[in-house]
Amino acid sequence: MYIKTYMQDMGRAARAASRAVARADTNTKNKALTVMAQAIQRDADKLLAANAEDMAAARAQGLDEALLDRLALNAKSVAGMVEGLLQIAALPDPVGEISDLKYRPSGIQVGKMRVPLGVIGIIYEARPNVTADAAGLCLKSGNAAILRGGSEAIRSNQAIAACVREGLAAAGLPETTVQVIETTDRAAVGELITMRDYVDVIVPRGGKGLIERLMNDARIPVIKHLHGVCHVYIDDRADPDKAVRIADNAKTSRYGTCNTTETLLVAQGVATTVLPKIAAIYAAKGVEMRGCEASRRIVAMNAATDEDWVTEYLAPIISIRVVDGMDTAIEHINTYGSQHTDAIVTEDYTRARRFLREVDSSSVMVNASTRFADGFEYGLGAEIGISTDKIHARGPVGLEGLTSQKWVVLGDGHVRE
Image 1 (cartoon, rainbow, N blue to C red):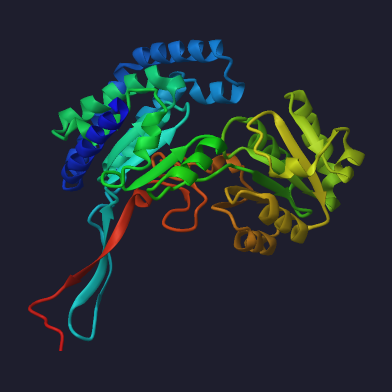
Image 2: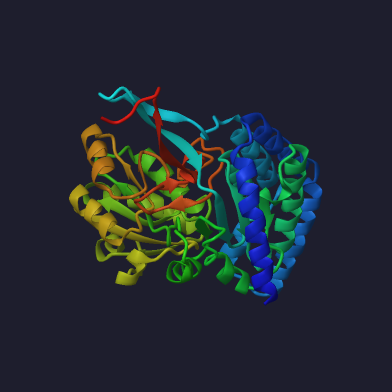
C-alpha cells in the first residue's frame, strides 16, 4: 500500500505540474535548464563521488561489464550532461508552433499547433546521464516527468535530481515538474505503467527483458525499442580505407550501447581485401568474431549460428557474413535486424540511395558509423531514447518526439452553411 500511495501522490503532483510547465514561456524554461547545467558543473565532484559508490556496489553485486560501462560517470560524461542541457536551452521551443495554416473555401484558416504530451514516465537502467537528459528534454517540450532509474544508479540519480530541482526552483517552476522516484522497490514500476489518470506515455531505456515486461504489462502507450541489432554493410564499391575505419569504430568505440554494430556484412567482391584488415583490428582489441563459412575461409574465426544474426551482444563479439551483393545484404538486414540503425559503405551514389530507401530501420546511414545514431549527434541536444516504432516517433526522440499536434481553426465570426 505504501508504494501505491507514494506513486499515486507522485502522479497527482506531476499532473498538476504539467499544466504549469505547459504554459511556461521559453525564457522561463531556458532559465531552469541553464541553472540545472550550472549546478551539475558546480557539483561535478559530488556527482562523481555518488557514482563511485554506485559503481562499487554494482561490482560487489557482480553486475556485468556492459552494465558497468553504462553506469559509469567521468569528467567527460558530466561535461556532456552540462553541454546537453545548454544545447536544449539553445534549441527552438516547439510548444505552440503552428504549421500548415491554410485558408479553406469557407474562409476559415486550419492548421496544426504543437503541444506537450503531458506527463511522461521514463524507466531506465544504469545510465545516470539519462536523468539530466530526460529532465531537460521533458521540460523544454512543456512536459512533466516521472523518472525511475535502476537501483544500481540510485545515488547518482539522486545527486543529479538535486541539481534539476535547483534549476526548476530558480525559474519559479514547480519542483514536481521533474520527479525522480526514490524507492528501489520494483513495485513502483508496476504502478507507474498503469497510472492512466496521471501518465500519458512511458519511455523505457533498458534491456530487452525490461522492455518486454513493459510491453506486456503497461496500460499506457510506450515509445520503445527492444534491442539494437545494427549492421554495417561494406559494398564492393566501397573505399577500403573508409570501410576499415567505419567497421572498427562502429564496433569497438563502445560495446555496451544500442547503436553499436553487431553484424558486419561484406560483399564477396571485396571480402578478401578488407576483411583481413578489419579482422586484424578486431583481434588486436579482443573482439571475438563469429562468421559464416565464406568468412571463415578468409579469416580464422568461430562459426556463427542462426542465433548470432539476431543477437545484440553488447560485448566485444561480432558476427560476420560475406554476401554476394547488395540484394542479399538488404534482405539480411530486413530479416534479422531490429529496425534500429544500419549503414552502407559505398562510393556508388545510386546504391547508396537504394540502401536508404529499402532498409526499413529508424536510422539508415551512408559512409558513417552506426555510433552516430544518437540525439546529441543529430543535433537534438540530447535524446529521451531511440524508438523503432513507426507511429508517432521514430529514431532518436528529442523535443518534437515529446510533443503532439492538435488542429486549430481561426475564424472571424464564421458559421457553417
